[in-house]
Length: 149
Image (cartoon, rainbow, N blue to C red; front, top):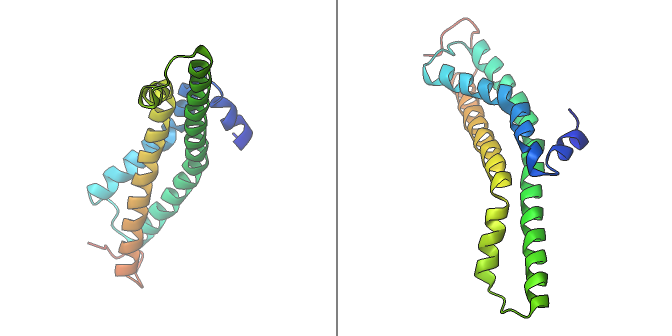
């Protein structure tokens, strides 16, 4: 799926679940890698290197989607806020900034949820990438068949 197709999924709240469906395999792979690392099932330099490459690919897949999610959430929140402010100003009612900010925040709940989930998995990728890089650095010139533990 290309950038424009992904961006279309963020155009309304009804298609946001499709974004998560697009990412579910990636989330599952990240979870599985985390389990392998946590349970010390990545034992050779070759396995660490392969895991690092896989994590980099997963990270590369999620980053553009996260960027679209973050931008859309911010834009929708700003658009709602501006619209509400103009509506209140036109009605002559006293404008209360905190109230409109809260309404704007509630308005983008679905966008925030998708963005936060993407951000969480990107952070997991970063941590695991760092762990793999540290393992490779620690064991420097490794023998691909020699266990790292």
